[in-house]
Length: 60
Image (tube, rainbow, N blue to C red; front, top):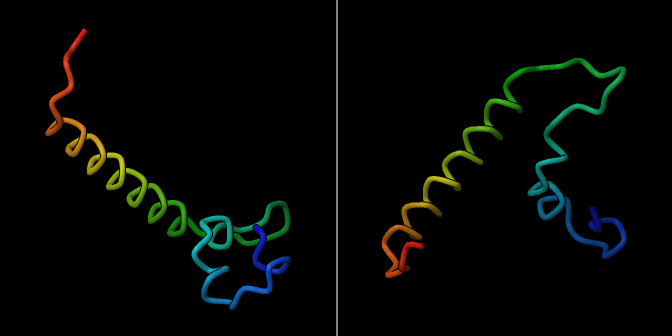
């Protein structure tokens, strides 16, 4: 989002998920970017929940 403003290299701007989904309307929609981003988000959530479960947090 701020890559151009901060004059970051292109690989740093490519980390943003918004770079991998098409800008609608007018762009060809491919399902794979959405699938990969959903799988990545699910993996990160699962790892976070597993890490949180391992903590000693009292249940209400």
